[in-house]
Amino acid sequence: MIKFGPSGACEEFNAQGFKKTSDGAIWLKNKGVDLFEYSFGRGVNISSEKAIAYGKVFNENDIELSVHAPYFINLATVEEEKAINNIRYIETSLKALKEFGGKRCVFHPGSPLKLDRREAMNILLKSFENIVQIKNDNGYKDLYLCPETMGKLAQLGDLEEIIEIVNVGDENIIPCIDFGHLNARERGLFKSKDDYKRVIDRLIDGIGEKKTMNMHVHFSKIQYTDKGELRHLTFDDDVYGPDYEPLMEVFADYKMTPYVVCESAGTQTRDSLSMKQYYNNYLNK
Image (cartoon, rainbow, N blue to C red):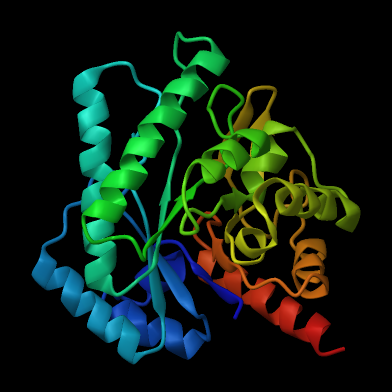
């Protein structure tokens, strides 16, 4: 089943005086979304007691939780201490995810820094093999790790690199395709329905139909420069894009069941509902 929801608390939620994450469960249910992505961007700072409590209230309101591991993970690092920390960041993210009762953990692959890009990718792939083994050996085999396509040219995580990473792991490694990021790094990749189809077709060819149909998705309009992503925008933007409507049509045409997380700048709940409504209307034509 395809699901839609926001990443983080939106401006409307905050403006109405809500402060607790647990308040978001009923609020989001009343809005009509299906999922919520909890970000550990600056580190995993949540107790087991609180994670279990959040999971209970979100589950009672039929809102599935996914998580985003800390943003500063870099699996291409050559520094041993940082490599050890990367494992810890992902393990603690998976621990909290399991306590939430969720299934999907998104993470940033990393950056080459001063390394040759191919050399950096080889280091990343080897590091990820180790992480997948640790994941499966420590009680998280049933959870999904989702390497994300990135928006800046200097970052690892173009479409082909994500395909490589996904193929390192087992059936529970699926891509997080951020269409706003791909659009930004290519400075306007998505101009038509066919542009989206080409990406989906490449994924089917590269990682198989099952993982593609079930993939994780991030979507927002993003301002970009010659170096790629600059900042996230709202769906009100009519300059940078990309437009979500043709992607929703592709999801319906291909009978896909992704989880679609909106990362708009402050309007992520409203915009996720716009995608859900358009998808349902197109599907029911």
